[in-house]
Length: 209
Image (cartoon, rainbow, N blue to C red; front, side):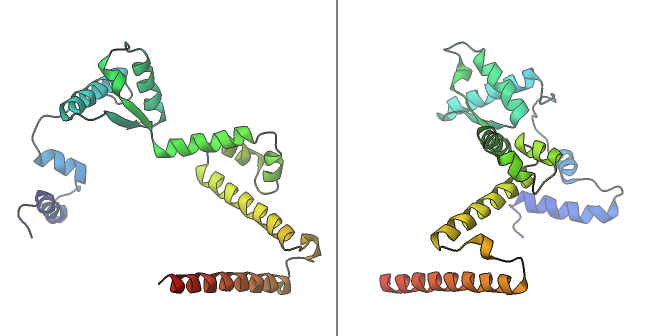
């Protein structure tokens, strides 16, 4: 083991101490007991004073390093930080901060925008064939992200089936039901298309090589 790697040394010490101490201390608690140094004030992250202090510290460090200050918040803290920057004077130091919304909340906002745009397009009525009304309300409001993503995948798949049926001149009404024979026939056609596409890609790759 490399003795210069302090993290590995502390991890080994923690693993050794676990069987010898009850109750077991967590990784964060263990690090607090072995580390010494100046720590930020113990403030509530949702308080405006804590957000303001964080923004000021980031601006100070960014100016020292000559980079653009940038910080990512989740939605509640992002809104409060945005209000702080909005109330700052035009020539204030905090005006240079670039606020970013967390990826999960960006996805929630994006899903809600899609549902708002498609609200009168029959999307709600279409989803009633799959989900319950309460579930649809949650998905349309940007919540239930996993179900909302799956919902869009299902709709995308259904639209592709309709487009392909038009392109290949195959009527979906001719399929008499979800029988094994029909399913096997569709799977065989899919495999044929996939095999043809794979063969063409290999031939194209070999010709390039």
